[in-house]
Length: 264
Length: 284
Image 1 (tube, rainbow over the protein chains, first blue to last red):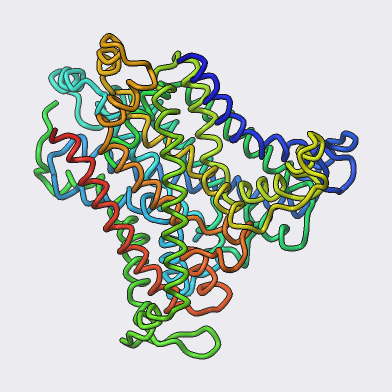
Image 2: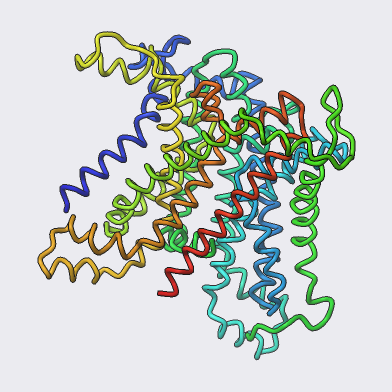
């Protein structure tokens, strides 16, 4: 069994790593050629992300979009998850369903819905519409992690606080919030990383007025190859690995993922 | 604290913002899209409110039938490939040391979140003539000359399997973590080899989970919109690509919307089926 396990893990690992190894390789080529193994060694293409105004603007746009939309997703998910945990209101589950829907359906559907909506309201192309669109699209992630966080709270703790005269607001601040903080952080982290990488919703809402990094790479691909695409890909992979590594450090990743698809 | 029904209007307070946002920016856009799918297309990319079925009537063309057929075939092939490797992989992963599990989960999440643009770019590099895998084959003496492997069906299929595999593992993971370990142990005690125990005891016990996962991965693969464009030829375009193309490049919003509504119906029917398959598991 151990031999079989090692073999299967090796083959799957190789399949998953191979394209990334090649991308990492071409990102350090000396000249602007697509060659592997790399010829020469240069980190200039990583510098390009920050020094070339086009790439830097795209990076800033991506980071701003991810930071604001993840915050919005959290602001929608937190009161909703709290309400569903605190109150007995079965009909309110419809909003839970609405929160999970954009993520379950093929993304092109949400993208097209938002495109028709922004076009109809005449707001199409404004940068903030992308933040709202992503906030709605990724609300699923904090909603699922927070629902899990609330369900893990021992209700007798809250009961004790209530008996001692604390009102809802005080209980939330002093008892509930500290307990769900890790779930708030991981929900934000998931939404942030996915928004950073998202293409179709961003493209359909602000694709003609603003370039995020995924949009920039796609546009650049049409005009040929530049190693900066490779360095951006490596950078994004590192960001994702660091964020998810921190989430694993902070909380219980196997438990978080063990329950993630529970409600699907 | 007991959960209690809301008593006063103020108790509904926390619900206002989330409910308002989800209604305004998900339900209304969805309804707008359905409405537009019945609108009349005008010259120059505009459309006027109407109630026409022309956009749906276009489904009856041979071209649309081919695209739909290919999309379904591709998604089924990707789902089968992912689940065939994903089930034994996740089974072994769920029985590994905790540290190993966490390392794999972080890696799988990182790849799952990687932009489809970047996955497409990475595979087009790996399949290219100058930096691609064929150079390795030449070096090993398996091929005489490096060549480009894209655009081709194989390239689209490989990249989509790559994209869907982490998703497959994460969907299977909860069920396989909870799988009763005594099942396989009993088979082992009775003299079955580990491989035989896996196929005769574990796989049958997971039948409904596997079915539900197949459907979930199928829907996931149906949503792939960039890989067929970046790595395939026009005949490898899927319904998702066609919707994007009609909406952005052909400026035919009503037709794009009609196709999207159709895709929603297909997906919803399949989600229903997946939920049903999941319920069957609990009923047993």
